[in-house]
Image: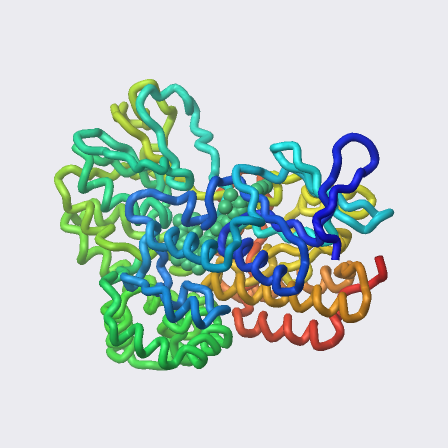
Length: 546
Ligand SMILES: Cc1cc2nc3c(=O)[nH]c(=O)nc-3n(C[C@H](O)[C@H](O)[C@H](O)COP(=O)(O)OP(=O)(O)OC[C@H]3O[C@@H](n4cnc5c(N)ncnc54)[C@H](O)[C@@H]3O)c2cc1C
């Protein structure tokens, strides 16, 4: 072990020497730190924010909540933690999720190895020493044997790059970095730009406060009702009584979630009446259950149409004004091929007198003005504008760090045509670097806490294996990476996903390569592949002594 001694590196700054640097203190970074301590490794986490929780630290907009059931979206690694923490709602709200993250940090005494308000700016591999030199915005220099990127798939917000941005004299907010003290919109004229998940969650809440809310919609979205409610004691008891089996069922499911696991049958093999009955039952249960109802909704357009039509019909039924309902209907992508949303009263919000909808496909935004927003049809005046415009997903956070592997190869050059990884965990040319839920892994297409635990456990196992073999360095081979990238693409092409202009495809960021980034082969299939690779002495990797 390296301890955390001070050592002098070539020249200027004194570098702290560690076994592991972890970037990010969301659910991934926190659990990674815990496991590193278990291995007896010295580790430090660098976190840009001033607290733990990642997504749930930054996204404090009104209405923010998880859309996987709370007990499913929680750590499984500690039975004691699971038994002592009491979720209060079926879908935990952001404040509750943040309290949970803080509880975990305190319970496992994580904070003493987390340096907050510190952004990692570069990570450079030194071939002579086989170590990573990591530098931060505060001038830290760390020499580490391993570098683990727990930087998050949705942690870099998209810029509001509208013409005239900056001209507006009122207040502007981005859902992805909401003020900690909250915002009171009472009596205000508010604009929300966007109709993705954050918008769909925040719009009903903002509408309750604002004098008037105008929603600017570029792309209508599918959304399913959460039917959120306090968690019944009987649900908690039954979950805990079957804890082991439930956790295993999550790991062996397609999306890391029991709730989303439907039966293995085609939507086309049942009668129209039976299909409708099943969809109605799922709709009444709430959450993502509708999209888990049949096994071919992702692969057959005809099957998908049955679910898409069902949800469009529901939207028509929820919105009083048929003209508004028509604008809200998502026609331009099959359900699920963009991240579906889960809401509490989203469509019904358009029945309020103080809410209006602007369809940007008819009247695009021309410019932000000092007073508000000018579309091709009209000038709107506002007191506040909320940008709910999403994230530079999956590669955004890594792209902001100057990462250089063997021969000084910059990650941004390696990924110029889209991300390339082996298993979404490692990259050829970047030895001893790991990404938690990186592109090429199920990541955002799964219950992410389950995906995070699986990755952190795999990385920890890999490090333990290296120690056992007295190998200092592990690196994916080019061949294994090429095969994996080909497989990821091949599987994506068998689905309907590439049909949508989604952030899964990088389509929401101008200039970003259009590549399907997550792995859609199924969480359980992926997990088995990772287990198999490890069992075959880390097949597809080269191991060397340092
Ligand atoms: C609004 C919203 C709702 C979501 N809902 C769900 C859901 O219902 N179900 C689900 O499974 N997933 C959901 N997600 C995905 C969510 O991101 C994951 O579930 C999970 O929280 C990711 O944890 P993480 O630790 O990997 O990343 P994050 O929580 O994003 O944490 C990454 C951390 O790294 C830090 N960081 C990044 N770069 C640097 C750097 N260079 N230096 C220092 N620190 C850095 C960031 O500040 C951040 O705190 C949601 C995401 C968002 C944005």
